[in-house]
Length: 163
Image (tube, rainbow, N blue to C red; front, side, top):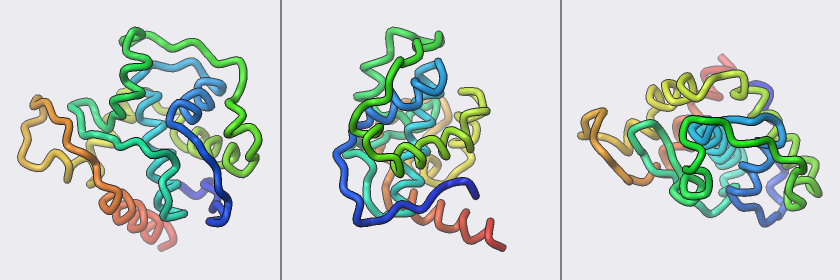
């Protein structure tokens, strides 16, 4: 995650998960599952770096990895097919170059991975694993993924990357 840009904590903005999703969709047409995981990583790294939430939504530990139910509802009709590309970036992000650069850095770090690779990656990480503690891999869950777990895990990842 060396490409991620530290954001100034004083920058204030009102962003929704849908704005972030549309920004990723401006970069590439992708499946709902891949979009969910990219939004999760944007949320996670933003939270880790700034100690603030990128948007107010909560991810849940579903069978196929972290999912935001509102984002799921918006794009579920696409199933396993790709959602069409967005022509423009939402103003809430386009008007904040630092935020756009941050989202782009998440895309540059994870966008080359397939939806299944991103799912596998989230399944190996403590935030999702902790939220699913005691559950079988096939068991349904809407357990929330805790912000504290996200921060602790990614802070440790950063420390390990720095050596």
